[in-house]
Length: 289
Image 1 (cartoon, rainbow, N blue to C red):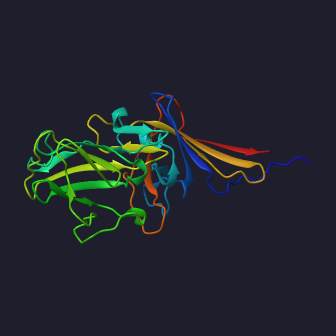
Image 2 (image 1 turned 45 degrees about the vertical axis):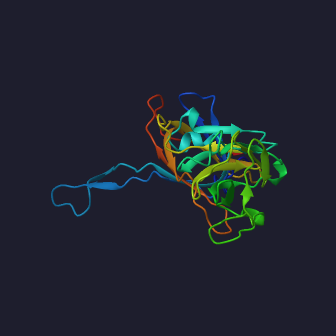
Image 3 (image 1 turned 180 degrees about the vertical axis):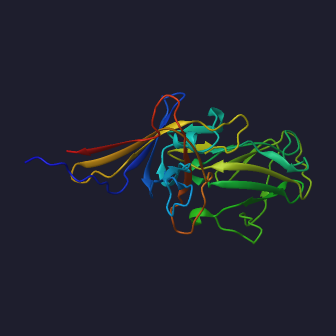
């Protein structure tokens, strides 16, 4: 005797985003707390005369929102959940085997960075000694500086005081030569070094890495993109359920929140839209192997 299986779905395995304008771009979220769509419509009573109950009811407008907390995702997800433009993201898929430092720049007055009488430039010295963070270089004399860093992540930095200074003795900038500290080579100017006490310069360090992604929020020219959304249940005993929404737009809490001893979720809100090329707003598929 044949029978129809009971239709159900268990858990959530992943959510896939597909760009509508350019279907080259797909994104996947793997660790998803839930995907809850509010497609319920309020029933509006149609009344008339002296009837104690409605003659009929008509469905109201559904909100069409999907709540989607995402804890793990690939880079492409950012294309769909924030205003996006290609220049907003810089990916170094293999990371930086030698680390990197940004160009040092004067932040308070102009004596620290100077090709002749100050620090002409900086470069990576011993890459293994590089520590992540934003650095501040403060002149303490005509040729000496102190170094400050804004994080001791991993316990790799020892602070000397509450001002976040890390060197225990002043660092001398040599004329026409170099000095290395914290894996960074400081190149002295070609003339006599003449810093003004209290002047400041800043730069940023990326340590050795195997992957690096820089993503800017609110980049000029960025815009929200419409996408197709498909939600996959877990595969339990060969039973899988999928739901596809062919036209959506979304937004999320990017950058992510930071939580104590816990993975942060990207709290996404997806707005389901009425497609112009389909006569439905979503389609369910149930597979029983």
